Every structure is written in structure tokens, then in C-alpha cells.
Image 1 (cartoon, rainbow, N blue to C red):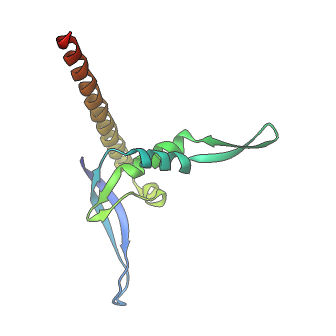
Image 2: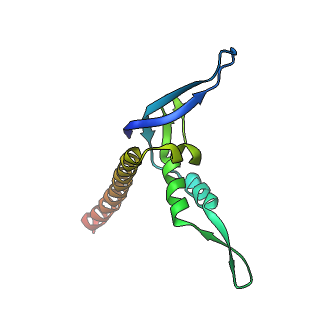
Length: 130
């Protein structure tokens, strides 16, 4: 899914020629659904140690989980491969964050609808065979 940001994400391009680094705002992103490995990585990265009952316990932070899933859904930023880093995500303007979240929700809805169509097709086939 193509997404156009209003304010953009700042990237620093390092020069190998010695003529200095170049900063650029990139506004074009591509979002894609996550595979199982990306979801697991997001969950592991979202675990926070807390004290509970005299010892440490790992808890998954819902806020961190949401951010880690969102940043992993960014597959391309301009010509660069994603995901975004947390530091890059922190630089996103509130307006662009809203754009990203709406696009990610649309992507999630589309994936949920696809799964529903597949199961409905199987049910209809089973019913017509019976």
C-alpha cells in the first residue's frame, strides 16, 4: 500500500566522497502486511522487565507493541528498504503519524477481509458438496 506523508521522514545520507552528509525528507512509503517472524520480533522487542512478587517478570507493553508493528509494516521509505527505526518513528509529525496509522488500519482491515473471504469460500464449497 502506497502512503504519501505530508511532512516526511528525515534520512541522513552519508557521503563516501568526503563532501559532507546530505539530509533529505522522504515522503513516499510503502506499507505491507507482516509475516509471522516480524510479529514475533515486534513482540520480543516490546517486552519490558517489571518487578512483580519480589522478582523480575517480562511484560509486553501494548504501546511498544503497536509502535514496533507499525514500524515493521513500513517496507520502503523512498528507495530505501524499511523498517523504520524507533528513532525515525519518533521524528514523524503528529499529522504524518495519523496518516500512517490510518493506512495501517486499512491494511489490517483488508487482510482481515481476505481471511474472511477464504473461509467463506470453503464453507460454501462444503455446503454445496453436501
